[in-house]
Amino acid sequence: MKKLRRSWIDLDHAVLHSAPLIWQDWLSYPLSLTQYIEKRTQKSVSIQVLTDKNQLVLNDEQDLFTRSFRRCRVREVYLCVDSIPVVFARSILPTSSCAGINRDLLQVGNKPLGDVLFKNGQAPILLRQVTEIPRIGFGRRTLYQLRGHPILITEFFLPALLDKIIQ
Image (cartoon, rainbow, N blue to C red):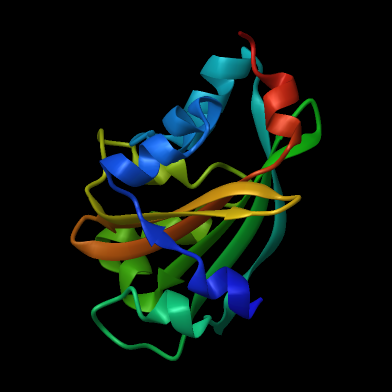
């Protein structure tokens, strides 16, 4: 796991174009990943919630936030097409980011987080990093700002995704 935590690279033009062409749009897509999967596969995406609870975050995740916190809500899901996982997603939702105007984050259940995040258009991206893990695939993590509060979403594109894409 330590290697994974050290392998994240800030996404810029040179990094993006060093990735295989098939992954470049996926790594840089700025809107709802769920909607993009549905567009590219021409199928509905279902969400399989693996965990959704308050817990500690990894140090490298904490380092991306400007404010320190001990615990937060961590939500891990699979995005599935035809009941097959195509993306693993891990969301870090600090308590302060889920209160007040953002309290709808607490009721997302088995719906895509993007339904809340992109409800009123594009959520500002504060930072995007990418990685490649052998035998797993490419991943990206994005620090978004939702109504003034930070939310970190990490997504790994699983090998089955390429099988589902309509060319």
